[in-house]
Image: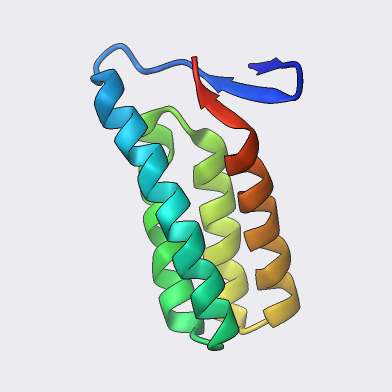
Length: 101
């Protein structure tokens, strides 16, 4: 759901709000790790981080994190710095807009 340029995420009923907030915080920390991995051309680390996001996004109510994580994983596996940087930028934009409703 979008509201005035923000992306609002409804907390899944079976998860405590604090756990979802902690997941979102973890995604933002992983974004910093992705920037570091890209700067060091550590594609394996970026691939692992993307894989984690791909697996964890949807269960926490963040299907876009799952999609972006998958794209980051694929870009890392191919070793394409430009594509990886692009996907990391998309993730950063998303994380800057997302809020828990």
